[in-house]
Image (cartoon, rainbow, N blue to C red; front, side):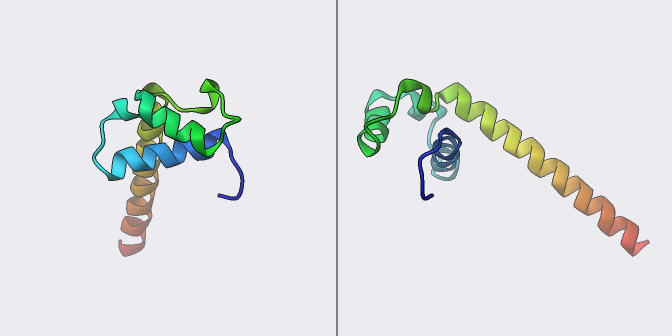
Length: 81
């Protein structure tokens, strides 16, 4: 990413948690949050995702992925029949 966005941080933190088998609570860990702030001192607590934010984002991404997968399977089945 070339610039800081709240959505970008949420995506990056969610990816870290999901792909490294970390607990959702990592997002609420004070040491972890402080490390994020040290990378961008202008950050406010609103800019940093909470465990709830990560959970909702991960769930929504999963639902979106499953819908796309279902649509792709349906299209392929129509083509094959």
